[in-house]
Length: 237
Image (cartoon, rainbow, N blue to C red; front, side, top):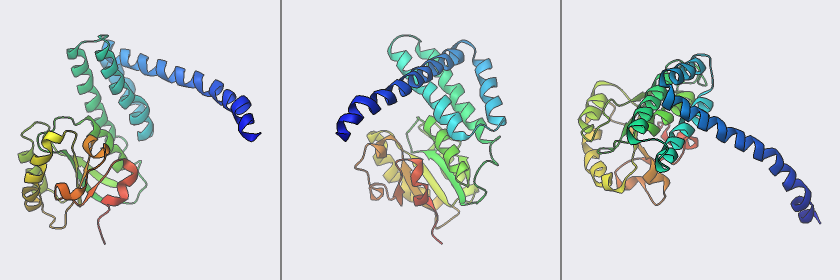
């Protein structure tokens, strides 16, 4: 009887409530995507206004910038915009994510958990997700920095960053299997370069999210599949 009641009455009501909200959200994301393509300056001003005004990071990134990035990919696949438009828009989104971390630097939980450096694994050029993760770490109380190198030759820049600053944790993003051997080969140099001899190295990204990855594959200390696992990066006391 209860199962039948849920099927006949409760679920239809929930669907009737959820569907209009989902459709409205999809329309909003499509409008935001058109906004960044047609008026990139106006889009940037609007996002900056939200950031400075205190819009929470999870709303700014998770409900605005990341969905727009995903929708750009869909529009490109459907030939609704060209490669140059997508490239330009993605570059602007990445800059906005970086800039948004600054105005919200005081919006964390007030308890410093340490210093973390985020970087793409050697050879990786996909860095948009790093900016999103940086916001989550910042909100969780970490002093967060993103390594300057975002090219296939970024290892030298990463080593320089580790040698010039003190970090408790290094977070590396790995998306493609093909770059996995390079990360393993680079790990000894990464640890040697660090000013902190007890540096903890965590690996995340699309490759880890697909499952089957273990930190020992690269000589790391932990793997992260989502920001809720930030506690794994907490330095030992």
